[in-house]
Image (cartoon, rainbow, N blue to C red):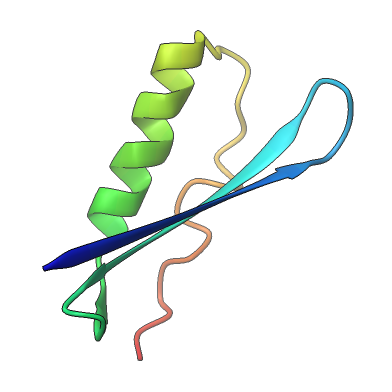
Length: 63
């Protein structure tokens, strides 16, 4: 059972922050799935100028 949470936060008229959290069984974070969702969204939107600051920002947060 996997839960996906997506938050979109407008930063400016040209930028939106996307935060994705993927959890397996509500206990473990799935960073690979969350990162893939962000990358596929960028691809679908045709985004070419992206910094890696947002991709993987949630890594290392195990609970």
